[in-house]
Length: 552
Picture 1: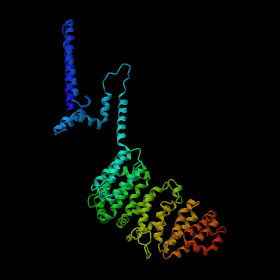
Picture 2: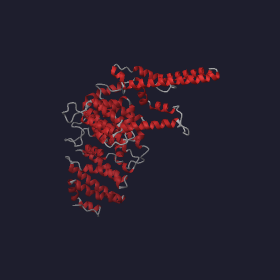
Picture 3: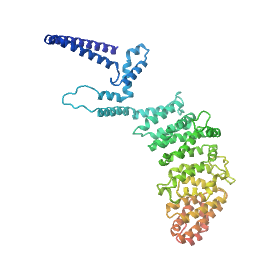
Picture 4: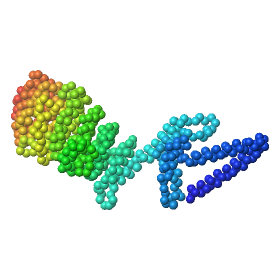
């Protein structure tokens, strides 16, 4: 009603002004007509009619009169607005809605209108160039958006909404439904991560990761979101420039794969056959979503050069997570030839960057330290195989071992490949290497002797400093700490090999002997059985190294 009253008053004022113009124009025209014979009145009438036509044309458009396409589009939008409620008809004006929509969706049009304004400037004022005016207007518009969109109170409100959401208002720890998880994820990816100040990002990451880890439907939706368009996968897992944000996406994926692993164990074989028959398409109901992601990831890693240049460990973490998700997943990776793929990835990463295999990763920046998750995946697969002992080793990946082909572990014991030796020398993921050594040496004298021979050979040929000795000493320490049925035999063999190494190095490499002697006290502190054998053989040690004294 107020708008109506304003329009009526405005129309009255316009009619009064037009009447006054007509009367003034008539008197002037009469006066001029008396002087010039009445020709002036006709000319003024024509100018007035032209001005009215121009005003009508301007009023028929919602934007700039020169842009015919924008005006027709605005008219179509205005025709689409149909307000059936009589009360809303009086309050809302479709023309106002159209103008608001244009300014909101295309702020450049309003800037152009401002820049093309034909108002006369006061005398002495210089007009602002159109490009500068448009840029300033755009910056002001962005400032308003950022001010009210990237607001800490707004972030806290949304976080409390997804944290305390409970339709029953009874359960304190309520699992979010799918639509709320989707809303939280989209808010996080489209708004929150683009803010300059993200002090609570770790809380957001933990909350969303828990949601994906506890809701299988949400986990399938997220993996499907990454698989249906590879640009989504690359932009989040590979190309994301902010490391903390990229790690949060990897955490969501990690929890999703861990959630779906036990549930999709029975679907892996049929899904693998479907992928080999029809190729990598979007996963559907009844498929193993996790396997689709792993296949797409391997395809990207082997074919995309950008992945090799990025050298990001987050890219490969999903392979280790999938391998540890279920025994069927580990068996499928063995049959898929994942070991050969990992060896190929390592060989491509180390061909140009590492001239020698005796350089630890933390002393060589070009070492492929980003491939650490692949070493973890190898450790998971190796520890899933059966051991030769009567009791299962403590490093077993699953309660029951999986059946694998006989040559599956040839990459470890094949001297022509020496793949694992390079990983040991560069000290990439030392805990994973320890697990491999312990699992294969558990109640197995042949494999134990293999590791001791490898230790002696590498210590005498490669290292020259403490940092280069350390990876091999870690293997030796892992062998000493194994507590199985052949523990005493293994410790005796370890001590014999160690003293033999000290004797050889004293003659050829004195620096090696000075490093090896103090390390005996460290082994004696962490292993009581080794200390007992060392005490019995203290005379042999003193004969080789005169300065050695056993600590009490």
